[in-house]
Length: 620
Image (tube, rainbow, N blue to C red; front, side, top):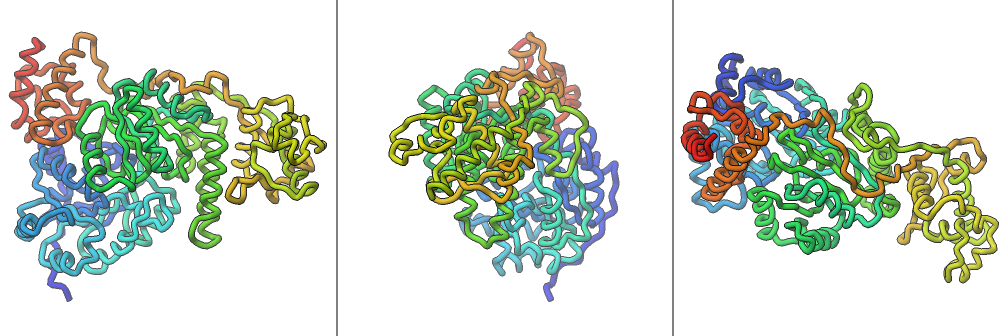
């Protein structure tokens, strides 16, 4: 049996917890369910926490770590970001460290000694390190206050960020049964919650599920035309000089898009698994530390990124699931300021994703699960209802009425009876297959419906088909929308390397006229990226008067110099929201400055006089 030091039960003292919140973090009160979670873990109970990005998840284990005796062990999959996580705590006056494969032997030994002697409050470890007997023996020699399992959705077997090493974390309960555990994630359906609880042996844990709503994020999905130009329009008209993330499906698309934006005068960096580790680390560090950079990336980038001022997340390709989409868009607007989640989506996206599913590894059940995830994503794209309501419903939550801050609320799309159009398209596919024994992609079927005499039509004598030219009531782009929506509704499918259209079991219901086919018609003004109105819900927490803007900019300039000197991201010193409040309040002394939310004792002592000097120099 391991010689684990005895576990000490700790009673929860609200005043003590609030004292830590004020002194260390600079906040006067807890938000949402934070207090309940902190009480649960501090008192020795287990917790499974679902809270949206920017909702304050980290406080839920950081404060218990400071209240309980011993050292908290935080399991994080983010080796590349551990230094920033530790730097952020150090800036608050909290002693923290990490152990991972990037460190030399001397550094590791110093950290291990500090851990065993309880000279640190939190130790960050990667999940793979817990496969090492050496690490396990190290932990058995220490007094552990709690285990925090961050990004817990990584344990979901077929989740969007699945990490096999997370499956071994169930042994934490087996080897340290009396140490409380808290698993945290921003994204999980009810089924995924159950899977997390089962795989981590947290079935007896209290579940804390916050609202998934991020009211400051404006969700917009546009029909894909020339996506890079649409993206450029979005950035120039709405997000000039803003930091943001652009997601692409392939490495080649990442490189081409980053190069395109750079050529257009927008500073952009690529990030994907094909780049060497040094380049990825440098690009990530620049994105975190510099203002106004755009990161163009595959989904390999973003988990654990704490940069609060990401103003937009754009997708140039269709995400594979609603979970993935929510996780990625949630990286925008962590500071609560108005932000945009923008997606360009087209027929080829649907065809490509279906082909990827058909060729994926795994059994039929696995492919069906992937298909179910894609169907939910397509339903979100094609809905004529409020996108936020559809998104929240996917996670089992309801929203009353319209959100007023998504494209379907701001520019409601029309719905139309597409039954006849669907019958014409399905009939074309049927005749090609049954009269000619042929299968073609969407382009050929649409050319036949429009009566286009192309070389391919002539080669296969498709002008002789009864359906030739019967679709003149719709334009090419509208027919592509019909194909896309039939695919989304499961009334049409694709197969083979070239994405040939084939009928499904449900197609016959439409052809017989026993099933109506409602469709979405995009409003004309939604064809471009467009500038959409901001919702009243997305109003900035602190509106600066014109005379306060130079004060705010002066504080940001000071922060940039300090951040560069210390080699840390600027937001670790103070978030923009804190500087905005300082610019508005113009505190005249340290006591007034210390009363501003987000200014803890350590930061007040370290930066207080400098801030007052900046304010005096500006004449504030």
